[in-house]
Amino acid sequence: MTALQSLQRALALASIVAAASPLSAQNPDSSVACDSVLHRAYVDSVAVTARAYLVRRDAQLLLPRVRELLLEPILEHFTAPTPLRLPVFGPGPARLRMLHPESLGDSLTIRAPIVYGVYDFTVRSSGAVVAIQATVPSMVPGFDERVLDAIRGLARDSATAILARTMDGRDSVQFELRVTTGPDDARFRVPAATVFTASFPRVRLVDAKPADANPLAAYPEEERDDGGDGEVLLRVVVDERGAPVISTLEVLHATSPAFALSAARTLARYHFAPAHVGACGVPQVMELPFWFSLRP
Image (cartoon, rainbow, N blue to C red; front, side):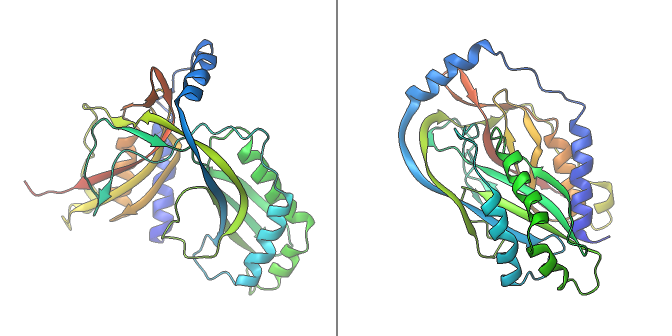
């Protein structure tokens, strides 16, 4: 099993752990009032471009022409929901340098919403497109369904037949499509395609922060023979009640899959003071570092 496969398995196990902690239901009577509070909190707007990145899941090189042939029909089939509701706000509050937070205190900041989703699909040598799923949901109402429908449209396009001729005898190739309005991700040095451009409102809010009584991550037993220090950086959406949405969990950095699994299991038991505008909580992306050491 490769390190990547081990890490994917670790995240799958973490999702099972988190399933034992159901989220409380939102009070529907508060939604209208909070919409008004958010509207009054608008400061200005910012121009954004949603970009699509397409890579192979096995980390093999994807020829530029093949990438274009696959992305073009996906973008042609895609239409964004109207109106485009933007429930998740951009990352906060930690400013990280070498995985060490500079500040985790309360901060009244100006944030813009973010659209970010990761979608997997497999193209078979027959040209069929299967195993289409949102592996990191955007939490934007209707958005993931539109992206998945656009990927399904590949089966009606000649691009998959052209791709089949480049598979070198493989039965199938797995792909990952990332759609984001956030900053460029240094992990993916591939050309991006524009999905849409828009103006997103910026809102003055208090960033989310971890509660004081959250558990510490356990040093994994399988790493004790080596005994080295471990570092993990996780990204997750914290919902308006302060609970991590484990389906949005991503590992940005990990010393090993075992450290990543321990951090993910611990995060599933975390609670947060949610990002909020007045008394109204809002979902926010957070990047959270974990450290492991056997040293006193």
